Image (cartoon, rainbow, N blue to C red; front, side, top):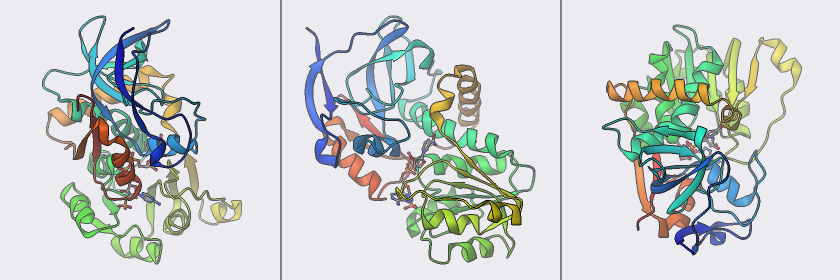
Length: 320
Ligand SMILES: NC(=O)c1ccc[n+]([C@@H]2O[C@H](COP(=O)([O-])OP(=O)(O)OC[C@H]3O[C@@H](n4cnc5c(N)ncnc54)[C@H](OP(=O)(O)O)[C@@H]3O)[C@@H](O)[C@H]2O)c1
């Protein structure tokens, strides 16, 4: 039996549940193909999956990892692929054929992976929020994987002013470098006022919010009449409740977004991905690679991600 190196968890919990193991290469099922993985992408969701606290319930034993870049074993084509939530932290992954996308000539693994789940999420947030020309957009945690791409897409999707939040000076400097017009601390204390100040004293039109808890409340307080907030993550693990009176008072919209719902709409994903690749090829999108960890350091990678120590896209080199 052919075996491979993988990171696996047989329990839910802290980083210690991630173990480097030698396990059989997966057998692709009906409609699936086997990918020889060169690089796996990390996503914040992997830390939720590890604890079984994500939108989608997880089942043990589990090889974490929602996305891989590598070569299709049946055709030899270089592809990026979405695993559906599990299977990526390994030397081989069995994935659905319709969740594989060819990597264009000249595009490296890091770019292909950054533009996949995080890039598509950033792109779809603008699509979902119906951002109109000249509107102000707040990107919470603008130096992160999704955030660093959402900041760059802002003006390209017509936003008049892009305001980012980030928890350190370095991260805020990165947001400004990537095209944000202003950057402020993600800390919830006084966040509403800081957002208003960053928008010349005016409330804002759109917020992309992924922290939850007090950050969510402060962002809601910064919205103008007809403002829209898309809640697409709960990094703080604190969920919020929204009172209808609060929405009516300023004609606000709060929308949820989960990328998982796009997985069964491969056409939607393919069109957006093509657009992202075109923007990257034209030099309009810069992928920020925060770090590449060897597979043996997957545990540390998740620790760093959850501790807010990272910027941009994080990768796992499965050959090391
Ligand atoms: N709904 C979807 O389909 C979807 C898809 C992709 C990602 N997401 C969500 O979007 C968020 C970003 O994902 P990502 O993969 O791009 O990761 P990321 O932004 O690179 O991940 C970590 C960043 O989150 C920020 N953060 C804010 N509050 C935090 C908290 N309480 N604890 C830890 N970090 C916190 C930190 O930035 P600062 O320290 O600078 O604030 C941190 O550096 C996550 O919540 C993720 O679950 C959702």
